Image (cartoon, rainbow, N blue to C red; front, side, top):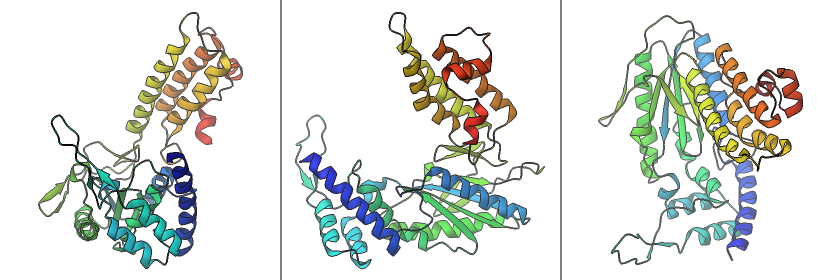
Length: 344
C-alpha cells in the first residue's frame, strides 16, 4: 500500500503543480519545491537586487527569516479552505482532503501510555505531495510585501526581505514594518518565525570604507542584531561586503571531509578502480566544491586552495606521483581543472 500511495501522491503532485502554475496558487517569488527553480535562483536574485540598489546610491539591508516547525504547523482546515477558494478541481481537492485527514500520532517515551490521538495540523515530511501543499499554504506571506520598496524571495520555509533607502537606520525601520506585517499573516496561518534563526545584513559595497552598521530590528520585544561575520541562508554564507571567504572555506571543509571518507574505500588490497573512484568524486566532491559559484565570486587565493585539493583528489584516482604534471593528471582522471567547473 505504501508503494501505491507514493505513486498516487506523485501523480497528484504533478497535476497540482501544473494547475498551481497556471492559476497562481503560489508566489512567483517562491523558488523552492517547484520545477526548474533552485536555491541558486534565490541567491542570484538577492545579490542582483542589492547591487542594483547600491548602483543607484542607496543603502541596502536584508532580513532572513525561518518558519518555525514548517510542515508540522500546517493547519488542515486552512489548507483545505485555500485549495477550495482557488478553484482546484473537485477530485483533486477531495484527494488532498483525504490525504491530510484521519492522521494520528502518539508521543513515545519511557512510561508513556502510547495512545494514538487524531491531529488537525501537520503534513507528512518525505511525501512527494507535501512540498507543493506547503508552498500553496504560505503564499499569503508574499502578498503583504510592498514590491515598490521591498524585494522578497523564499525557498519553501526560508524567506528573505530586502529594502533600500538613503540610510541603514531607515532600512531597519522599514524591515520592522515588514516583519510586523509578515508576522501578522503568519499568525493567521498558525505559523511563527524562529527569532534565534533570523539574520540581518546591512550591505556595504566591496570598496566602501565605512564602518559596519549595527542598527538592529526590534519587533514585539524581540531583537534581531546584524550578523557580526556572515549569515547562512540556503547553504550560502553572505557577508556584508560581498566577501566570499567564509562560504568557500566552508565548501573546502566539506569537500575535505567527504574526500577523507571516500579514501577509506581505498585501503590496501581493496582499492577502488580508477573509473569507480572518478564517479565517486564527480558525485560527491565536485558538486560540493562548486556550489554557489554562480552568484558568489571566487578569490585568487581560494581558487588556488581548490586547485591544490583537487590535485590531491586526481592523484588518489590515478595513483600517480605528486610531481606528475597537472594536465596529465586531469586527462588520466577525467577531471577538469577548477576553472572549468566554476564556469559551468
